[in-house]
Length: 353
Image (cartoon, rainbow, N blue to C red; front, side, top):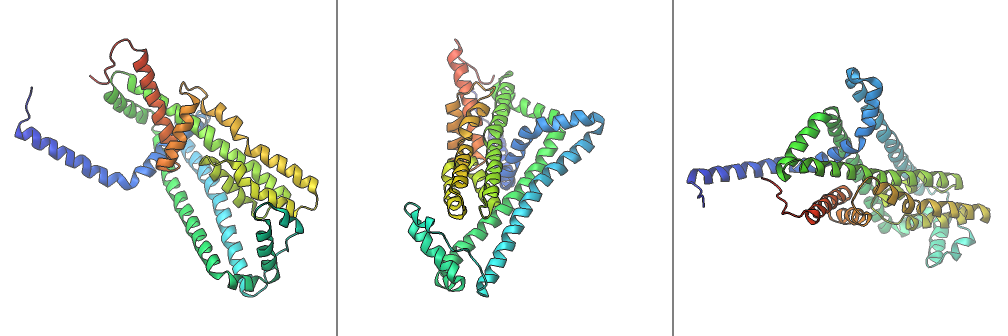
């Protein structure tokens, strides 16, 4: 057995310290960097199509246009929603202070709502009669909820800024796709051995793209269709409700639970029960849409069982937040591939020579 010399031991200690030092230096940026990799993998097919239109000679122009379009699609609706929310909030607070806030009184139908109908009716009625007295009476509650809401939206703005930085990182990766993939492939092969690393890398790539289509894309579709329904029926703050629907769909909360309050609101504000019923049927169908689309898009082209993908998404989200949806599904997909290779192999698998 070969023994370590003092020099080799010192080299190992110094190398370990340098790696640890490097880890702490990049630790604050790991989340942003990971999102950058995920966005690069997910958006690269679109980037490639745009590049094929412009040609390789105009790669910089195609990259610039792609960046501007994606940033605009993110910034414009976000700015519109946030500015509208704070503008409405400021107008509402001013109206409450001047006792000029006009709120439509609730209809008697509100009392028929199950469990909390009477309570909602009483608070709504009191608010519509004298908003200033209601605000004074419930001052502590309103301040607490108002401050927590503002903090959440501040956190949302911070998340969007982080997302923009991640997108810039993704653009850098996509514009140097061949080099980035080759580097990642060499690293994976070094870890796993032979060409197995590249195979695992391709599995991770396909899993990320399927998760984007099966979870994020479906969530956007549901939010957009719900927004149309909210807008047509006259639900107050349709964009905010649609945003809540999208977040619920992403974090795997049943969308049906989120849209139930809008059904109650529809029946209370609609003059026609038939219209409210049509809205209810429509919104329930949209809320269940993910049960049809998700299994199709998540497992398309993958050998990983659908159950493992769902478990990876849910477990990853509980452990690491939204980014865990990708981490969990990729990890379980790779582990499933290793497990199948081990089961099918007649000889012991050597991960690395």
